[in-house]
Length: 536
Image 1 (cartoon, rainbow, N blue to C red):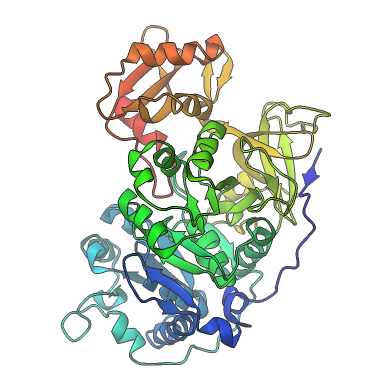
Image 2 (spheres, one colour):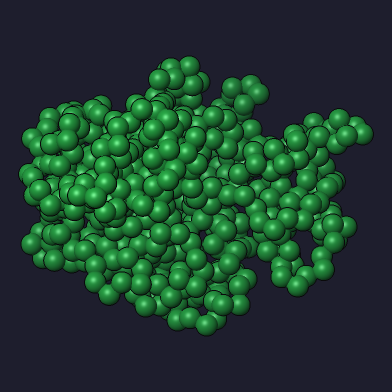
């Protein structure tokens, strides 16, 4: 049985993302601060941002970038990211955002797959960027070092070289419904990364769909620590916040002290995080040294947030904690909880919230293909979550096979995530379909064991994967545990802690202590790295 959002449908503009965000901005809003880099005293106004977007688009056109060309952007969060990113889109080109942690071979792979004609980056990432560009045959003049010395001293233009010309944005024409705006690459945690084709309409739709639930406004000061190059930060921060004329406080990377100082100094009201940050907010002693009273909403995404952990953060900071769900292929938001009480039906924090407006969901048994009904009470049986709506990607770049395996003939995107639905139509993510551990025929969700272990006072962080037991050839749950500093926690204690609270088939059967859990920039556990380390 399919089910829809409890929120009424929203109107979705036919305009480009640039026109949607900035086309009708008021004179009053033009002088609001759009972005300010953490630690700075002055920021960039909306007037200045729009001027730089248009000038950058004009400079790209003058340097040969045409409608439909791909331009790669390799950068951590900075205020400059915003005008470069939207300048690319304003020129009618497609932005392929590159993970700022990538090595030269990884950058080269994305440049080749996307067919990028230009690479824009910063000097701090210049070595790997230039090596990657040379590997794929990009000329030196096509590598822009935004904060570099510029063309007067090097082959690489800088931001001043492009903005200083003061060129008008080109007059471009394209169909927002089909024209590619961005080409992020899926994380590759379950396979090789694939280029996710998102149109202007995808991005415009997801801003409109998210607004009734996330309910941001021009009064909000939003902490932007999640990377803009990842679709979560790109849509929920860079686009949704700018659409609402909020102020973005921009952090280039997560640092707990700077994170807390930024909230305190800039009176941040809305904070978007991934679950690893929630662990710090719930457990780290530094939290008590800062005034975080300005925060009225913390939203967690990118991976499931455990209810106990979320409630611990809410209690410690005296704030509202919500979570959502999405993926690059969904632009990315597909489910969320209302940011303010009374804005809609309440969703339990153990869930990922409600389907967003203009979407239809199904829960499907992966073994039989049968749709799972919404139960009269309690939770349904688990099944794969399918989503249809205007936020569903156009497909994977140059990969028709993967596209057909992911989007069916009825337009439903098969997420690969196992979920349940309750009697009210609220959705609960169980785990990745491909990451479920199969122990003696039983399904064991790693996320459930991770959430449980994070409640242990001596566990600072944890990841669980399935490994093959040498003696039996059976897949078993193995926990990689980061101890709290000064703890003498043992593997036996970890195993006993879990065994006392779960069914026998869910018990952790191996434990390894490590210094840090490998994670993507968006906060997702990189299980493939743990498997590689174990040889599985």
